[in-house]
Amino acid sequence: MDGDGMSADELSAALLALEDQVVTHIGDCYAAAVELERLAEPLGDEGLLARARLCAAGMRLRIGDVATATRQIYAIHEWAAQHGDRRLQARTHNACAHAHRLAGDSAKRLEHALSAVELLDDTATPFMQVLHRLGLAEALALNGAIEAARPRFRQAEQLGRELQQWRQVTVVLNNWAYIEFTTGDLERAEEIANRLPEHAEAHGLKLSPAVLDTIGAIQIANGLYAEAEQTIRLCIERWAAGENENADDMAEYQLTLARALRGMDELDRAQAALDSSRALCAERGLPEVMVRVHQEQAEVYAARGDHAAAFAEHKESFAANESLRRTERQAQAQTRQVMFETAEARQEAERFREQALHDPLTGLRNRRYVDEELPALIAGDPALVVAIADVDRFKRINDTLSHDTGDQVLVQVARLLETGLAAVAPDGFVARIGGEEFLLVLPATSVWSAARALDELRRAVGGHGWQDLTGELPVTVSIGVAGVNETSPPSQSAALSAADRNLYAAKHSGRNRVVAGAPSETYLDRHVA
Image (cartoon, rainbow, N blue to C red; front, side):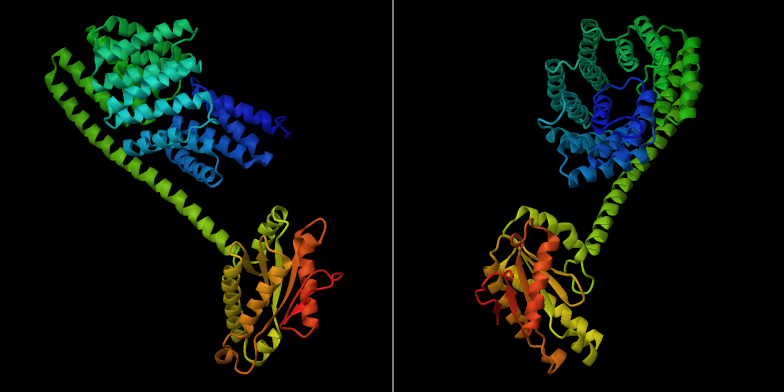
């Protein structure tokens, strides 16, 4: 348990509660997500920390910090993919879809929404099962495929009822009704919207401001202006009481109220609501809502008979809409740049890691790679064989010829060993572990089979045409071989010590030979020469 008194299991449960809820108080949810991210950092659980970071990033999207949130989401997405965390991948795809929605990139949104559904399996929570299918339905509709979207909306609703996700059913009905409203099918929109109060009453739910705004907009479209005013007044009242999914929603609600009041010919009150919406748009930077504010202002001027002002406002609306399109294109470009930078940073990190695990002279694996990988190989393969090969009298090559020649000898020896080992042990590897020392690892091989194969490598090194490089100086190797099962318990240090001991024996016996087996054994051709 950490210093704040929350264990990994408790933190995971707290995260799940935040991940799988319909957000109604964005301020509280954002604060909770940031705190859980802080608490996850010292626990040392990478998966838990990734979840906490995604949760916080998702809340940042909702409060408008799109660039920062998108960068974080894509970084977490890369981590989830690399570590095979399917449930987290599904969640990150859903978050990416949300980010592209805010950037106005409907095609990318659909791509991620589809992946978010395809990754659902038995590990996905009931909340995810409904949420991700709803996201796909919305993405299809906003890409012009309303006929393909409707079955997905029905499926999301039915699944929500089967899984008793009553709040999510409310969200499904609300979003479906709004989509139908925006596509112009007012009859279908009204039918779906009318089910919302019935559903809420049946399950003891209170309709959120966002749902009330949807109902009000549909009432306006159907000429029910007085009913719409009552609906939106209740919407604003609940938002002011703290029931807000997004901090910017009040501008939208005031605009809907203005439209309802204009329909009732209450133009002064409509203007007051419109002024409130305009001020919020300017204060919070809401260009998409501002376009519709200009459009509604033109309608109010027209209703007053001031057609010159209405025409001027239409021009303002057109200019604002053009500005919005430019802003959306810039946002799309920024989102794509964030994606590129995240992928580029990952690739750069992978390159650096690969470089850190390879010997710069020979290109072979290095000692660091051996220390990272060999313990697991030993633990998983009792028939693993290790061998240490050392270039005989290498100092003489350096001193007599040059260090540059010595480097060329090491490079060529590395190639011969790597090529030869690949032929007899494709799953094995060669690493340079010292100046002129090389480690060869042969999985699932008996010691004596390994010794015979390594002797062929020894012969290949000695028989290579070295004359052009070293003149009359020969280049040979001595090799010590050991099976990891020769010591109990098997370990990297014990296996390498046994191989090193046999290498010493090969050197002591005259060099250019292979020695294998434990000292107490009677060797079958202990040195193979």
